[in-house]
Structure formats: C-alpha cells, structure tokens
Image (cartoon, rainbow, N blue to C red; front, side):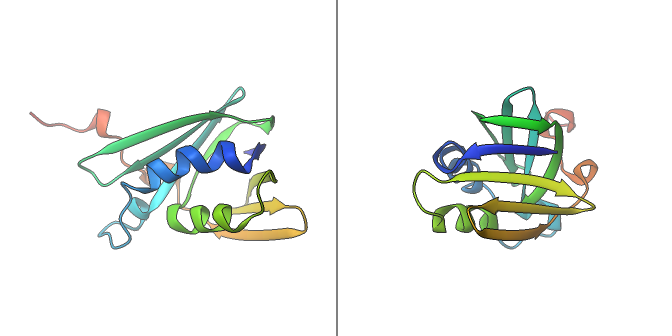
Length: 125
C-alpha cells in the first residue's frame, strides 16, 4: 500500500475514527486504525468491539492499493504535529508503515489486517 494525501484530508476522518479507539485494550489490534485504499478512496476504520466508525476521504495520488493497521493515536499525533497544508506519503513495507512529509520521516509498527475485527461479521442479536 502506498499513497499520498493532504494533511487536512487525512486528519479530519482520522480524528473522528480515533475517538472510538481506546488506549488500553485487551486486544492490541483494537488500539489501531484500519486503513484501506481502493482506487483513490481511503477508508479509516476504528472500533472498540461495541462501536465501529468508518471515515472516508480521497487520496491525491495512489501508487499501490492495499490495507494496513497502524496505531491510531500515534498516527493522529504525528498528523497534528505536521505543518498546515503539508502533503503526507504513507507506504507499508515489510510490516512497517513509513510516513513521510517534507523532511520528516516516521516509522510505525503494523499488525495483520486479518486480526482486525469486523463488526458486520460478528454474531449477535
């Protein structure tokens, strides 16, 4: 997965989705946000197993579609610390997400997408 997006286009849905993600979880993947890229659409999904929020935005450039889970709070803090109107390039390589903006470079750990719970698939009444 590799795409470019403006800081504002990513920060708005990320802030909403990260609100449902709690810091202390029994499952480590629940502190992550699921990022899915198809076409020029970027979907951000966060859940606490009771509530699931999905935010969508449009990437300015998509080099490779795909999906990954990255720590929600860290990603949000990094995006907030970047200057206004900056462009962000996010690439997932070998189990790591590399975020670049200007001369800054951040490496975030990822967890397997298959571990991320999907509420639609859950059984319940």
